[in-house]
Length: 321
Image 1: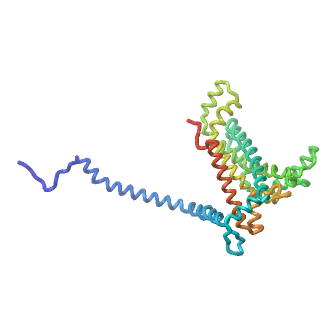
Image 2: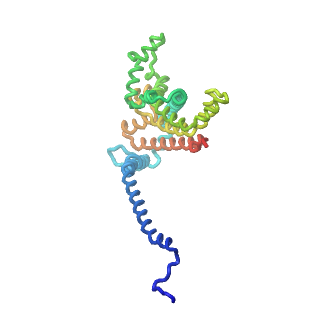
Image 3: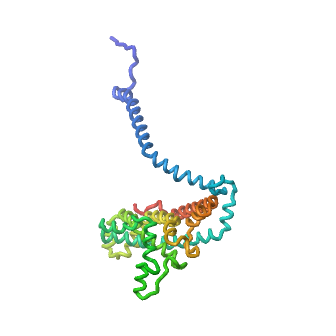
């Protein structure tokens, strides 16, 4: 006897048919969960994205536009094309300010990198005390303005304790911030004092990623501390060191507040760094178009230096296998 059914038999086994019936419901639930996570992520990202657009993207685009105009806040912006850039190329004060900035950057980066690397290695090899790390980081907790004012008092030619020590040692008092030769190196060293602890802790964090087994094996082979530093520490720390140097170079080119509270660009424009010159053009002489052109030029220079540093140092590649 043959039994018939109105519905055609299923071509899938029972388990496969059951999964086929339940899969759309699961996918819909997973899709709803994914969309919910996306909305939640958008809510958390919105304030940061809004701040990025309002305080970075928009001012940058506005500055690029103003660099092609003549604008003084009192009258509408007047389009002048490349006039501001032509003026900048023929402006001797601009080039002198760029030279002063480069001198500052070289001193700051050279001293700060060497000192920070030495501190980081000492923290790793000799002690990992949290108290010492806190002491090293303490100057960074002070603002640049406060640090500049404190060192202005310390280095005062007549009453500063720094010059009192110099005089007590039998030397002539040194006008650290009032002499054309001493002014930029002094400002650079003030900023080194403030930032070296933070830079050292960044490098210290990079040192923690280097396996101790390498140092132990090198010790067994009789390697000295200096040889281990050259053969192990420097090569394996290179990506972190490269990124730290890129950040430090960008920050150094933007020096302003220390100069503003200590020398005001003097003496005789010896500390008239590019950021201070841009500030004077914009808010001192109300030449916002010209100041914007110099700012765009600085942005291009920093972008080129960053790309060049990244490629030369191979910051995106690590020797740790």
